[in-house]
Image 1 (cartoon, one colour):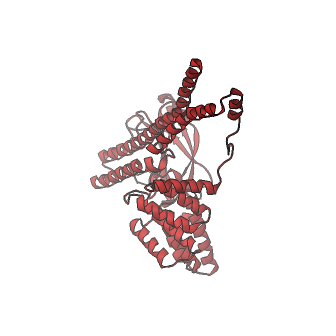
Image 2 (cartoon, rainbow, N blue to C red):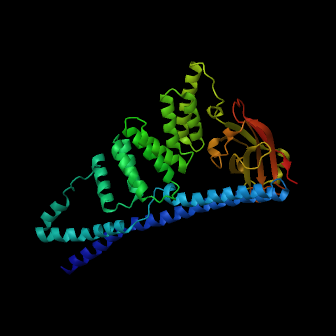
Image 3 (cartoon, rainbow, N blue to C red):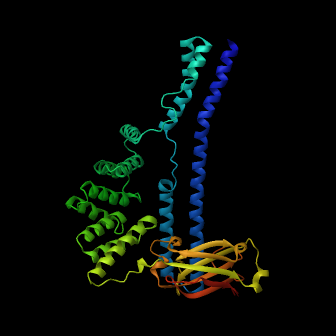
Length: 414
């Protein structure tokens, strides 16, 4: 019997180690990812700040402009530092509830085994019992079961805005808009008002209210939209609803104005949807013979660059040296698009788009023409220094380019 109990003890320790090892590894990875993201943000901030300081030293940037641009960089860095832990990574810290759950599971393994052995008392019966499949093995929970489990968890731990947000979106995707409204209200109850996501949740609440009323714009929905836009004038969901309401009332000019404003902070699929709505409203204006406003947003900004190094300068560089590619307003300073590569990547072809914008307000599509440059940095820093190699082409149209733009690095920075 001693050997039996020793074996049980060893197996118990192994089982506990198996249960806790993924938990410890999860925590280490979460910490490592958070550090990496923060370090990337800091590196980008330092590069941009160094470039501004260099331009101020050269006299091309006034002190007042330098202070304004520096403040904008610092604000973006703070926003990134706040958003990254909350939204960038899907990993969440392991809390006390999860730790207790894992501990209980680890302890239940030997307890269940001993209880089963004492109950059966025979090895053959025990083997049969251990080989029986567990109830529900191999079956995924249904949506209703998952929602019920999440609701139970939130009932026990209501101060969980992430959980309420997940529940709200689940209800919205399932078409249960009334339940979505209730869940979004709970998000706002527990989410700090200073959180950067607060205005976005307010807009999504307005959207849920609109859908819960079968696409009706009543006083309650308008009040929620107004409250959202007072906090964030460019909130996408609220402006999108105003555009939809104006479009349905055949006020196509107003719809275009709301959707163009929403485009300032939109990207990806949201931006594509807004552009599609603007195009439909424009087509309606054309069909009605009404004046159509200038709509540069419908022209997708894109510059295809073919970057090469002059053969005469090839001997002066190392394949591992850094290559910076920028698009700036003609005569301007702040980049509208930026790419970082290495000399060994040359020659290369690359497309500059709005997706490479450094801020939502500074994009290629906001300018008809830009200047593009490429520079081999001997120091690895974005600000130019004597001895760097560079090339420049200006002006370059941001839309309607049928052929790639050739950019040759053929100058030495003095």
